[in-house]
Amino acid sequence: MMKNEGKKAIAVVKVQQKKKSNGRNNAGNDDKKNTESDEKAGAAKKVMDAAGDLPFFHDEEGQPCVVIPVNSHWETYRMKNRNVRRWLNRQYYEKYRTLPSSEIINSVLSVLEGKAIFDGLCHKLSFRVAKQGDAFLYDVGDKQWRVIEITPSGWRFSDHPYVFQRGSNTAAQVEPVRGGDIRLVLKFLNLPKEGDKLLLLVMIVAALVPGIPHPVLLFIGEHGAAKSTSTKVVRRLVDPAVAELLSLPNKPDDMALLLHKNYCPALDNLDSLQGWQSDILCRAVSGGGIEKRRLYTDDDEVILKFLRFIILNGINPAVTRPDLIDRTTCLTLERIPDENRKQEADFWAEFDQAHPLIFGGMLDTLSSAMRIYPSVKLEKLPRMADFCKWGFAIAEALGGKGNEFFKAYRENISHQNKIAIENHPVASAIKVFFDGKSVWQGRPSDLLTELEKVAAEEKIDMKAKSWPKAAHILTRRLNAIKTNLMGIGIRIITGEHTGDNRMIRLEEVKQNSVSSGGPPEDDPDWLAAANASDEGSVKSSVSPNPMSDKAFDATDANNAVSESLNESGDEPDWIR
Image 1: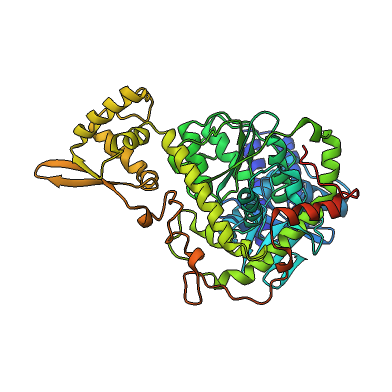
Image 2: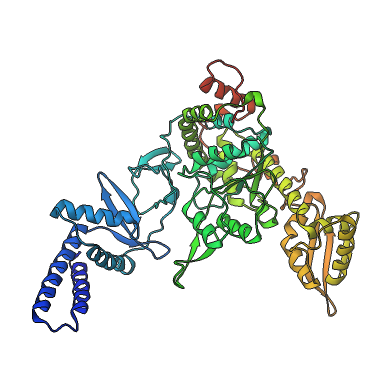
């Protein structure tokens, strides 16, 4: 299989050596050069032989890759990775007790890269989570390259080459404990709202579901609320990293690379996001492509496409653009009372004790949710519909809490929608202008004039970038915030004409007909689960739920923590 490739590598070396000898007429020197050329060609053949029949392939980005045997397991690398070169040198040395030159290695690698690109199959390589058949896969990140395979019947360790790649920031996950308890994580997160606790549990389990968009998890809170520590806790459970908290890049290429190399990037201590940063985060959540130059020295470009579970934190909501807010779940942390604080070393020692139980509970819950998921039938789902359906199944696996999850998620969307409107000058002006009206129709220029009057009275910033400077720009702004305004009962209709005039129409929407963008509390349609019956919108019939005796509520969570981690039996401290 490798003979042709070996001949190619030898030919490459001979051509290189021949070029070096051109123009030299000394016969003795030519003989010496020819001898050296033959020796290097022989060394190239030995390197090719050392490579053996390795499986070469390319990934979805067209990058050459290889799977190499290391001790009793397989490791997958892009061929530019230094470990491929190290492996070849090691194989060569073990066989010949000498090392090939860098020139020889480079020539052989060049040939093998061509083989991987033009002769090899294409395999998708993922970071941390993947899907193969009906199973979900989780890269443990350890030296043995173990993979956890999760199915409706349970989870187990297995080998899956051609599936995962790793970045320099990838760290190993702990050994999960079967029959663990995911609710133990609540001891380490100071979330005062019961709905937010359930949302957090659902989100960290859903983060292990590959191939779906995941909402951005945004922790906010005042100084002393342990935002950074809470972010670390979630990252350790989902995607352990060498550098757990990352800084927000200020260049698009750097941000694209950071998101590409981290399945669960955790951006710490944000105070604001620029428009392009919000846009890239939206694409990373939804799986949209991000264009990036492969190297700064050439024009070769690559389109990076991925789905990421992103964590942000800050004192104030840094997420203000409507499109990103619609893809964000915001959880508010309370400040830790001084009497409940612990030293950092003590806190992490306690977390390390609970970590295997929590992660094992996450795997158990996901396996149970995989049994429930096929029978879940939902109507009128909001944005992030895939997450909502999985969230319902996961909440059901946590003790029949699907409807409670929907209620908490709906309230969170509504809260986020209000933030979006408050932080968008046009939306804020529309809300004030339309107050008390049932319908309004006019030209874009007419509406802009009215909104400018409102902005002047309400001290809305008309110098903001999102404030339209012309009537035709107003229409674009309205199209961007239609969903948010629908959430507060204002329908925006653009594109209609009366004669030669383009018109904009604002209509009042009755609350019980609002089904997206932050539905009102009494909307029975969006929360179809609330009125589910045998023939209702939600149908879920599964075998007995192994976690049904662990129904989620704050009392049970605290009791579980006390029994597992607090020998004194006292109520657990919400510590950081």
